[in-house]
Image 1 (cartoon, rainbow, N blue to C red):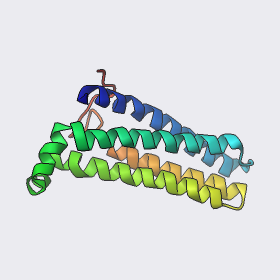
Image 2 (image 1 turned 90 degrees about the vertical axis):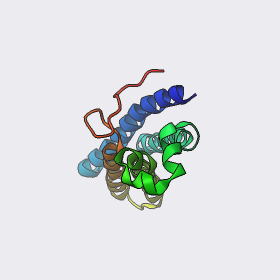
Image 3 (image 1 turned 60 degrees about the vertical axis):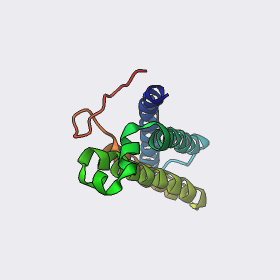
Image 4 (image 1 turned 45 degrees about the vertical axis):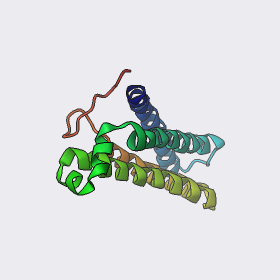
Length: 154
């Protein structure tokens, strides 16, 4: 079960990144171009948040149930904090993704409360953009210390 979930998590990463980038760019272009907020703008932000939620749920199952790395780390968190790889998977990756997810949802909530189209676009650009930056920093890219492949197959 662990390998298929990792493959799904890897695939969903690209979907979440594409949706987040689209939502942030639509916000930025609408903000800079002064165009009206449209149902399409709202839909891209909603898709981003929903797929991010699904991605987070898959990651949570990996974290709490199937991952041998996090299970090892959770047995002795003191020792895990001294091991860079275990610390990354037990704390750093998860914390970054929680922050990214929170930014996406805060952005959606603030967009709903914004009074003008310009405020909606600016909020989308800022919050979805920040969420993307946090996610990009928190992904275990192939060239990093906790390298993982760009595409994982089951």
